[in-house]
Image (cartoon, rainbow, N blue to C red; front, side, top):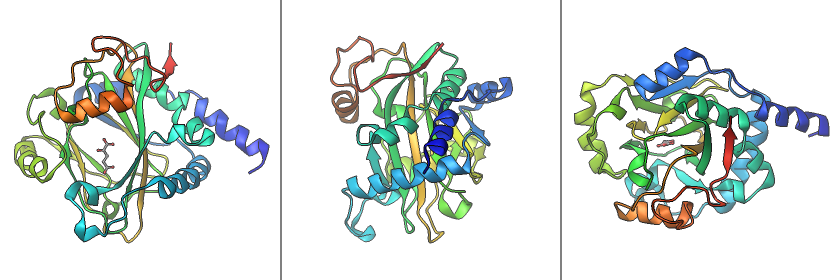
Length: 274
Ligand SMILES: O=C(O)CCC(=O)C(=O)O
């Protein structure tokens, strides 16, 4: 890659994306939004190879599919890649993406909670219904995850699916990702409309921390490669962990910073602010 083309990618990562009023309203009302043409093919292809190399270098889940739990069959999960590579850090710290999160959450700025690559292998299973904020010891629902497929994602690959408006109701908020969450929430979520469409190349989604989402199994024969970043309102406070997962998250992603205090440790950089 020439210096000139690297410069172009850096420019794209920082260039503002105009978030339409309808997109903000959609996120507010339905708890997610899908946006097309956010990232170019050239940019996705460049970071795909860097992220994929890191996933295979750092992945520790090597047991055969038939010996795995439902969670383990869902994807290879590698977190905080920004700490492993200066180049991947440029992607994770993208101002273009962090500004979209800031606009959708209607806040003054956002910090990074953590990033994670989620690779659904070519024979990977379903991602059960769940809401992410069950795992996070954070004071407000002002959180959003950007889900970035690194390839065009057909229905056979298991694109992310959303139960529209499910972030407005307090059901299933004590469920970890499991067969139980899939069974219980498949029943409960019948009252909500689902958005389960494919993703074009360059299309990304943002979903709120309390929105229920899932993904189908990958039956395509190809890996479904996805990079995600979790953003939080820069004014979030840390709350007392309510379960063992929140305790682990507090220690791992929030550096065990004081309960009741700001999420401003060195692992949680400010990625965009007005
Ligand atoms: O990629 C998946 O299958 C699930 C993604 C997810 O649950 C998330 O990004 O919050």
